[in-house]
Image (cartoon, rainbow, N blue to C red; front, side, top):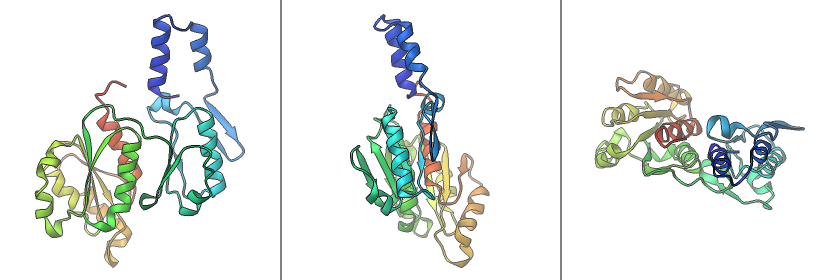
Length: 252
């Protein structure tokens, strides 16, 4: 059950459309469900505003399928699956609505939540090689109910490409800046924008990029105010955080 569903339930009680006992029954459903491979948190949407999300890495195709079907059968209308391998998507039983986004390794059961307002999240990358992480971030934010604008391959090696989109940067409510190599994109965008910037270091780069550690340290040491940093290649974490920031004023 999501927060908006609880609100609708209480509004029905206030309007006399259902009685208190019916509403209480709706809220008394078990807050979690134990299946043989997982304990499913059905009340996460009420507590946090976003229902449980499946982290696909390390799970077998059978496990992902079973968990997703259990969440769907419990009434969860939107189920995000991150780091979902192609073979898991091919195995997935299509008796429930399912979409696979191969570039981001993201699966979606159900439909994206409709955006709550006109504010948008801007997802920008330093290079084309960063797009898989960027799409994980963008799809996470979109699926959770946000407008998302994309600005790809605008790194500092050709900074005029970024400066050509200053208006789009200035208009965003949150910006996710994704880059590998030396990770300079976050500082440049942080120096232009008046909104929170979430920096995502990627593992893109040659030897001393150290699998993203160089970009991570660079972003952590950004001299631009308002830049926060998530872990290497963590597009999901950035998209989730951007969703929270973008919806702070929407009336939960």
